[in-house]
Length: 150
Image (cartoon, rainbow, N blue to C red; front, side):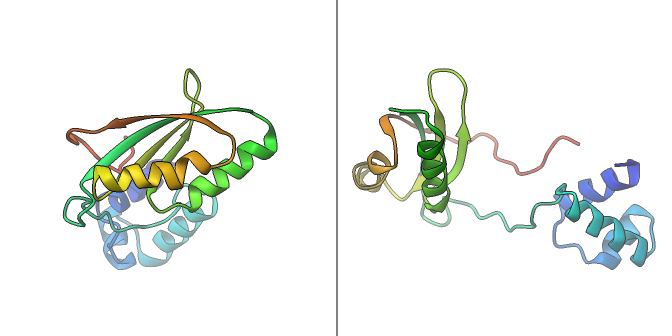
């Protein structure tokens, strides 16, 4: 990746809705070379997707829970099943495999604490291999971004 690629990525992080013509103008390229670079950045996985970021509070999803998950077993089948099922749950918006005391941390968004309690009892505790879940409720979000420091 060269400086022009980084410029393209910075612009797309700021404004993912830019048309190719606008993006090319912003980074000082003509349309076709800019398009080729964007396609190359997509091909190598630097650009995974373009998304609209919604405000969870406005959407009525007022509760963010950080669930620290410990597993009973760490065999490959259990890990793969857990990861697949966690990724299929829309309430789990972030899922990290961890080192340290927790095996995974899930960020879960729900409408209420009562809704989380039902999700915990009916879904989380039934995911493959779960030994325990330690839940932490966010009081306030001070920073939330999808922009990487490039």
